[in-house]
Image (cartoon, rainbow, N blue to C red; front, side):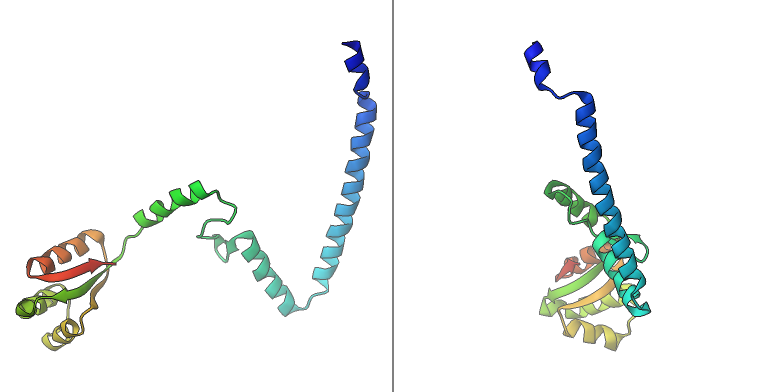
Length: 160
């Protein structure tokens, strides 16, 4: 046991080696920071502005704080977990009329007029240029009601 202890350097030797390495690293780090600061001071106003934008981008920040997108260093499992959360957060939906039966054209026009403030001509034009978005930015509940009504009369509708 005493032979193992004798192979470990004394605490003062280890401390002095660590202290020297730390001092050398601190000096170079300080010199590097001073050099960067001098370069930043030497930039003109436009270059400083561009630098600030680039720095914020590299740090994952935008004008209002943390970026909305996930940082690049995030693990794949965490990125996969955040994707369904983003899908759940969607509150505004668009109702898109894909197609309809020719015999149900009048019913589709009447139904579109009932949940929009379009006139007869505008509703007819909208139906004729199918596929088209018939209602934008509605809640999920309202969108599902509209989809159900349009499907009842023979239209194919999609939520986006």
